[in-house]
Amino acid sequence: MRILLVEDDAMLAEAVTRALTQSAHAVDCARSGEEADRVLATEQYDLVLLDVGLPKIDGFEVLRRLRARRSTVPVLMLTANDAPEDVVKGLDLGADDYLTKPFRLSELEARVRALIRRANASVSSEIVNGRLRLDMAGRRLYCDDQPLELSQRELAVIELLLLREGKVVTKQQIIDHLYGWEDASSSNAVEVFIHRLRRKLEHSGVSITTVRGMGYLVEKANG
Image (cartoon, rainbow, N blue to C red; front, side, top):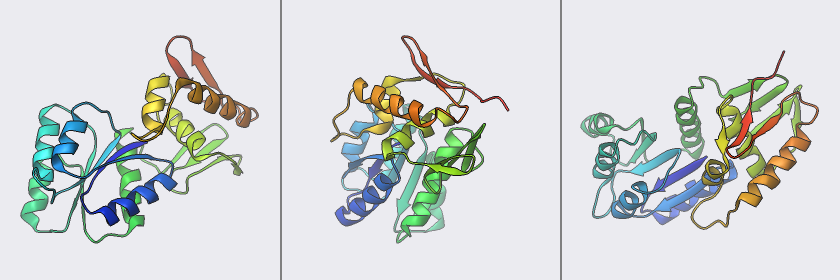
């Protein structure tokens, strides 16, 4: 999934980015409220991790402007201040969750997974389709409880398709979910990932269908 991290603490931003990237997420990082506001006005994300204490424009104002543009992207607020009035203010402005610094990276990752599941109307950390089972917490895909060896980006592609089961996912949507600002991307790369996944899923009973001129689709497997 594509995540925007808005954090002016360079060391924390690096640690969070590294952890989320290792979990097959594409992470962009903005270091100020102004930069975040500018990016969010033009780019699409699956989740925003938004620090409250930002230079020039604080996180509350970034959130207020985001929701004023009618964006429904999930937002997890990060703050060093756990004062109840600040928590209430963030939630009233449209934040979906709140996490107080310092925090464990494992807790942040768990909250990220929960918000992504909620945004995709999934109540479980596992997605089951026929003989396939995707463990979103463990970042593994299984067929008949046997793990399939996937690269991080292959895992990210099948996760997106399974989360949107029955819906067409375009190449551009896949690119947007796989790559951050600094990554090179192309539709050819998406075709390569789809080809590899089809080969690895060949005996699973789950297939990736090409919808000509639109994108790709995973439907509910029989049985």
